[in-house]
Amino acid sequence: MVSTAAGATSSGAGLEGEEGESIWGEDDASIAETTDVELLKRAWRNEKAAPEILLFEAGLVQRAREQIQLLEETVEDFVENGTDDLIVSLYQMDLDRSLFLLRSYLRVRLQKIEKYMFHISRTDLWNRLSEQEKKFSKRCVNAMEKHLEQSVLSRLPYGYQSILKQSISSEEDDMVPEPKLDTFVFCKSKGAVGAFQLDDVGDEIVDLVSDDLYVLRYKSIKGLVEGGRIDLV
Amino acid sequence: MYGRTASQLLRELDIADSDNLQAFNSDTCDQVIAECENHHLMLQSLIRKLEGEQLDIQTARNEDHFGAVTHHLSLLRNKRCLMAYMYNRAEVIRSLRWKVGAKLPEEIQEKLSFSEKEYFKNHSAAIESSMSELDLDLTVDMVPPKDPYIQVRVLDDIGDNLSLGDHSFSLTKNSVHSVRRTDAEQYISQGLMEEFFA
Image 1 (cartoon, rainbow over the protein chains, first blue to last red):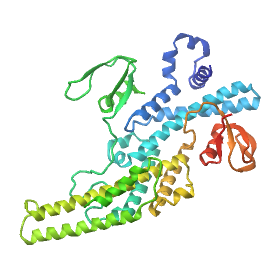
Image 2: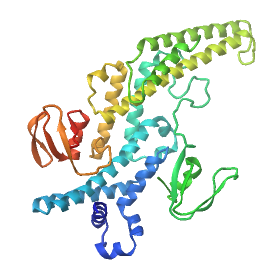
Image 3: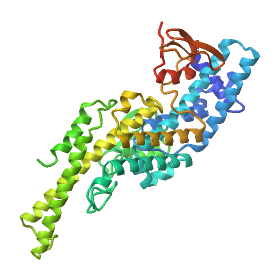
Image 4: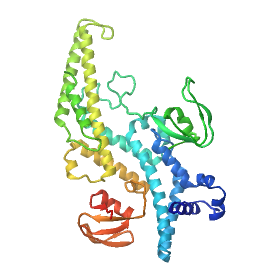
């Protein structure tokens, strides 16, 4: 009961022109997919399950923040007007949940940046970060470099002091931790994707039916995730 | 045997479970670094010897060449072990910032090296400035909320007449309050309160 109430309040506060009964009566599913809260939930789930960092949902985060602020004001008004405690706590609950989603989404991203800071700052994953995340990433790298420099690297012989390479004779940067893209993820497609080729060779073809659950290697469905055609769970 | 000392560092990482830090092993680190220095000296003297014999280092395949390769690879291995040791500890240290907060308790502090303490401070500062730019505290709300209010038991005298949210509480030891979860979270992570299940 609580969750429906919370869902209804959030869509009411979030999108214009949605009014209680008529819409919920028609088609729950399609409405549920278009509210910002649902979109944020999806972005959050994808971000949590994907081994590498995904594109920052700038517009969505902006909208979510505005709506959260609106909700906060509503709750404050309710408290001042002495509205029924139950109503207030339902709104508060909805507010808390949205805030959790937003915080967790941003947090998961920062923690991914922490984990793969060197990899991200050297590849085009860099362009997936928000301005503020880029700053964070730079500061992470600086702090880490300084730490490794002074405790180990500066004390090693010449030619072995690079943070990215094992030695000067390494041709590539072979000391950079990278996300494991061939890890398995659970995913569900929204619409029927149809026959999908899992590897370059074309040996394995899966017919992705909508709303079915699959366990596949992340790297083979990477493009579908980025294109928003499939969701991670 | 070459590389054995360095592997002890990794074994130490392995023994401690992922959330637990052992005291920073600066003795072993120093030993491994000295070993690296040694390998480097040996490597250079072998290269000089090869050059003295007018042999091309790239193509010569005598015992000195393979000796040099062995020293080079041992050095690389030592470096990888050292870096893995530091890097993995740094990961745990970072996670502490999220779990424990900006101030580490004494028993954790004393397990860190000087550089690690500095790293914690710098990294903390990075997280804090990031959160202040966002104007959103990301270290609360670590688990999905079930109820806006929770029951907490106060574990230590925190203060009289402290305002949490809209109300003020007198947070004396062992008292139980019903407070907003978000207000209580900071105290819980500092170990001053615990969630109370009646």
